Length: 212
Image (cartoon, rainbow, N blue to C red; front, side, top):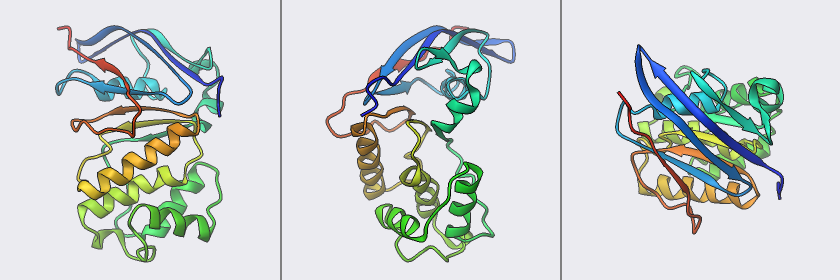
């Protein structure tokens, strides 16, 4: 268990294109906890997640990981972070295996054939390692993208609309994957238009409201 693990959002304010999206957003997560970020389109959900990942700066406020601002520990923080946006970010001309090996190489991790096969089986993609991504359905492509989670050892998952294009079976598979992640003492921040239970783990709720 990662008993000392923590993520804190402190008085975050963000504006885009001269319009303020949200202000004074604060919350804190500990080991085994997850945050559900809700709000209408345009309220700033993706912007907040990008700030949490250190990809965009807030207008004011800070994000602290284990009580230290992420700006002071970027390399270490990104090693502990797995961010998946609502786009699959897959190369259509490559196979499922080639996409996943490339993604793992970018994160500096070696992918064994056994680990690959186990992850694909868990995500309902057994036997598709050599198949070109362009030949997959949208739901299967989403499962390939989410297989990165099954391969990840990151302690913080930040997921932007992870259930898009997923059928009921895929949604349940992903929910179990996230539940296992949290059970290990890790954390997650999730935004989704679909409200899905993650085992018996109640989330913290953060509802964003555009201020102007």
